Length: 427
Length: 108
Ligand code: FES
Ligand SMILES: [Fe+2]
Image (spheres, rainbow over the protein chains, first blue to last red):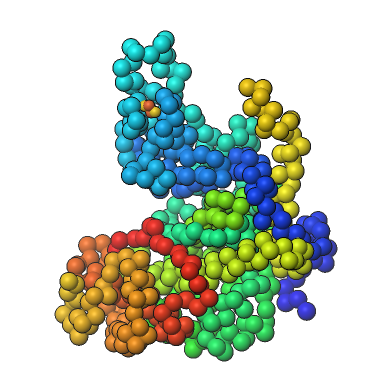
């Protein structure tokens, strides 16, 4: 018996015209499929690499290692205040341009120009080559021909995205109806950042799967609640308030009565004293009206909305007026780097700071459980002892993600004339 | 070594928990026995409970060194509350070798 209304089609899965058959996870255990994904998905979609607050002034920069897209990029705010993105590569002999101590580590800072560590070529912040060591030794070198290679870059609601496809649609168009629905949310006011990072031994999609369904929450995270509360939650199970899909993107809207809870004896002592927990700080800061795209079911018990902007950017907006982002950066077919970042309105006093600390630490305790489960799942999937898996209607977002990914890969293969081998032969 | 505000002098024996990074607070928790965590919790939790009004009037802007130490001490209590109130062990159960490391955090 559903507690919340399902769409007219009867199920969410059928409403989004997705198949209801058991699914294969070959797309998460095949090294060949991953190689295709790198080009078909990660070099053809808008990837969120950060926020504008990370480039506070002219000359601020940061680098991102985008292994899945086969490159490293440098993002910089130029002297005119515009955000630029370049392949992080020197035009002389290909050295990685911006790094500190360890070339594989991301870095950030402020500068007036980029200087290559190898032979000292220098580039302005708009990418122009400004200095060549012993320039007269070169043969008809026109510095105008050797600027840094630009990468498509655009900003949506303060989130900076890059795209390696010169034919990509504009970012705002790409974000679609789900993006438009949350435009105007005061992301810019939530500048207090707690960011966590983990190396996860699973395919990137498996961790998104874990965060796109809450069917697991009453079971896997049972011990996080008091015993009585936990029993109640398991008996109730989990149903979302609503799901939505637009193009490659998707969202799930959830209830959440925990901030503040109806009965304070149901929460842990530290939560009672700090008035905070997994759902955030119970005393929400005033941020005014919420945009229409949040709580689409207009349900009074609404607690949180999770958006997945394809391929790897999740945005979670919580009722107590804070938000969380997840990013999943593949490093191989069965490993990825996970980033979870919490954003709050800056606290004014020590009590508010502790309230936010509790929300952040609670997120970490849950995340540790989720991450470990995944490594075990990946190993078993790779055994191929079982190859077809039934997904329920509360797992519709997973089904959508895997379907969309396979569609991108199919589409790429169809439009790819010849194999990479013939490309090399022709050039 | 951290010095706490005078009203919290009895917590001085736990001042080594006044660590400014979540990374270090978590590492200290993992390296402690349940007995040590319980002792810390039993001493510090009641002081958090009776200091809510005090903490509310400690502005982060221009916070004193003593109040800053107190903030880090209570932050450790947040970290320690999980093993004591929920897990009955220092590590998160079923978390195996997985690690979630803080890479950006506010100071204070
Ligand atoms: S590779 Fe950069 S200056 Fe030579
Ligand atoms: Fe979870």
